[in-house]
Amino acid sequence: MRRMTLKHLETVVAVAESGTIAAAADVLNVTAAALTSRIKLLEDDVGVALFDRTGGRLRLTSAGQEVVTIAMRVDLLLAELKATLTAHKDKNAGRVTIGVASTAKYFAPRLIASFARGHPRVEIAVTVGNRATIVAALREQTVDVALMGFPPADVPVVAEIFGPHPQVVIAPPDHSMAKRVGIDKTELCHEGFIIREAGSGTRNNFDAFFGGLVLPPPRVHIEIGSNETVKQAVMAGLGLTLISAHTIEAEVAEGRLAILDVIGMPIMRQWYVVRPQAREQSPAARSMWQFILADGRGFLPKIALPVK
Image (cartoon, rainbow, N blue to C red; front, side, top):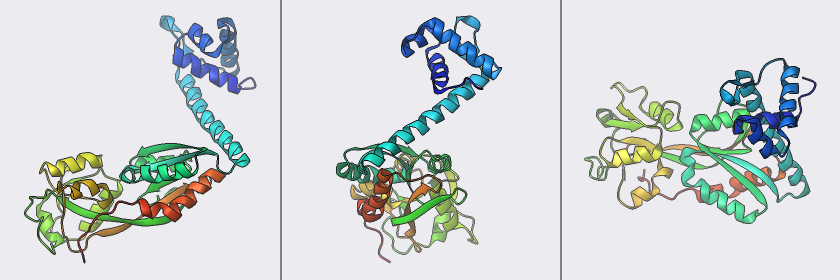
């Protein structure tokens, strides 16, 4: 592949997105003949067809799709390089990519906004997703910093605690247990639960809390991959749930949800700021990291928990 350059990668992506040589030539501001020649030289060099030319449009072959995938990764690396070089000129400038676990989205915007006000020349990109998404981003080193419930054990990362993360059981305010004190968790085994998907931090907490009981654990009769939908289902009377207390601040304050006074709760977990171990921190990313450790706790939702 002696002839492959960044320009060739750009060409394949442009043709794939445009569908025709003429349209891609307009995008790249070159002649159609030059673009055709460029693609032919590249295909001759790699020895496989990158486009299917049947039907009057150019469609990617499986080999062409691999080129596009690699081209996207190269773009990310070039963006990272640009940000790193910029940051070396000015420690208060550059780009930071932050991954936010979906449960952390209830406080992360306030935290990020505060950092941004103090660092107006830092460009911030935010990725919000479930635990699997954030772990994948850490594994692929596509984020500088992540906010999550607990760090992955199978990915090389650096992780530090920045605040407590209580887990509670909630019910509709008119539930028979809503006003009770000192509920034994065995009583909850007769209730139906709505719970997050397998592999999520909330689901892991649920399994750990109810594991080892003589009685069968509560029945999970609805599995939902969104905290918002879980809360709506509980408010509708479809069941109870175990959830992060930091996701229900508004609903509890407004009397739409009640925290049950269950013995052994809240389950106190921690919030972590995490980064890929092998990814060198830019000055801007280091500033974000230090800001979260110093001030992150202050952005966590304030919610009254049952007194133990």
